[in-house]
Length: 206
Ligand SMILES: C[S@@+](CC[C@H](N)C(=O)[O-])C[C@H]1O[C@@H](n2cnc3c(N)ncnc32)[C@H](O)[C@@H]1O
Image (cartoon, rainbow, N blue to C red; front, side):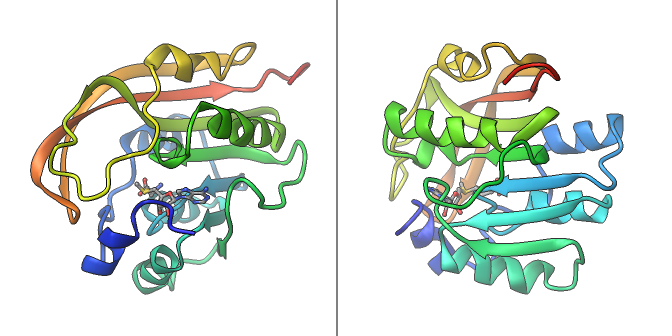
């Protein structure tokens, strides 16, 4: 299966860059992630996995794309603490109550629709230990300049829908920001509105 980015992975050796998502640098500067068990769900070429592993976390970096994982191996093969795995988030084996942090960066808008996303989110919530966190970035419908995209995202939710995924969790950070990007598959600079949030599973309930 193609997770939506294989055309870009085929065109360049590094599509998403090597800098980690700022949400994660903020989290790792405020909270020691050393010793954490992390799931990078849809890791792409591994920029976030590598950052967290370098801070001492143990990272399971999972992506459906063989090309993404090939790039990741070439970029970060020497970084210890990462296990790369080719798997689909809809079927991957996930232990219950396990991860201290689940990273979901720019993946949900590649799922088919809200039903698909709800099902994946149920699995990702269940694999998070009580007190563990999710760090999520997902395109929202406020502003999307998609004209130049060879393959447009499949599912663009509202900011409110993204927040509703974490009902009963503690929202530690939330913002709706506009990023400007350019990359293989959409080389002209263009804007995307993105919901970025860090949510924490309460200790007592799911
Ligand atoms: C836009 S890239 C972002 C990669 C990385 N998270 C980052 O921020 O650099 C989205 C990634 O999600 C992967 N993906 C999409 N659907 C997936 C699924 N169902 N299971 C696993 N990975 C998936 C794609 O293959 C792609 O590598």
